[in-house]
Image 1 (cartoon, rainbow, N blue to C red):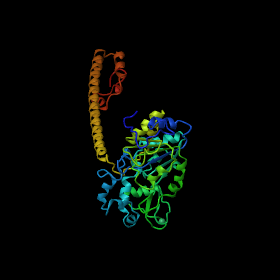
Image 2 (image 1 turned 135 degrees about the horizontal axis):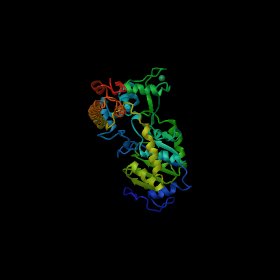
Image 3 (image 1 turned 90 degrees about the vertical axis):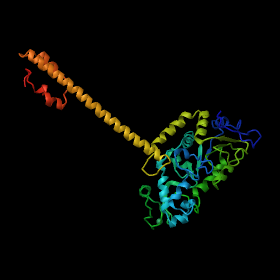
Image 4 (image 1 turned 30 degrees about the horizontal axis):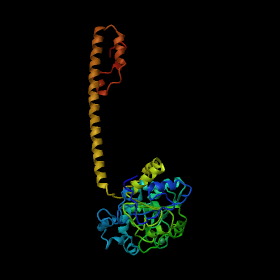
Length: 394
Ligand SMILES: [Zn+2]
């Protein structure tokens, strides 16, 4: 068992559904007929910086050094949250557009934790995946749209904030690339992706999906601080004896207080890999994750944290290519020189042979005409064997 695994001690009694409070028992339960409806909750973690998207390179929202809020300083916002406030957006949409370009989902690859959700769907046990992430990486990992509840909306659709008319995705992408604000073609209102801003209500789909949690056989919560409401309170909606698994860097919420809670403290990707190993789904997980390689668009927007390194790597690759080409050119030059020497040598031999048997020794002559085509300069300097008549004379 992984050393990351810790047993949270709040609940002292025996498990009523699981054999024990550990991942192996979760895996065993998942393979049983009793576990038909698995709910997932994922979000960017506000405190431990380990939301399930963090390993994809997407800056997390509140990290002081690399977090999104810190990067917002350059946008001259009165305060960082203003970029996601609908009233501020109405007055000054530009900072959001700059940020939206940086965070454009096509620039990031889903993580193994996203692919794990897809694997659950492959096994027909995924009921719903509630996500606070707006990055659409669950969709990009192949999780079907109807299984995803984006509690805070996402980039997946966009519309006018006034008349609500949907706006064309390709057009908005184009605008984002140019850092131009998009306006509604119907009423000239501002257009934004359907990301829920402060001051906006959560999507209707969120409200009508939460009742389904009452039928959950298992709840898996990954990468979250469980502080943002009403999302955080969803963990309480599953039945009292429903097994709940927390995969997170730190302990959050009331996990460990129920009879069938399991807490895995560690990174999300490590947690899902460990669980998949116990389920015998390890290979399937890696296969699904491998497929997500192709989801990257790298449309030229965004400056992920590693952009500097990427540029350096590109520069080095260019230099290496240049060196390689130069070496190749040098090698070709050497090859040409070598060939030229060979031609010279052959020509001398032919001339010598012709001189010896001036009356026509075709054997020697034939041998020379079977040689590969000679480089032009060699031909020019020494004459082509083809130009010689059957008797070896020009
Ligand atoms: Zn409109």
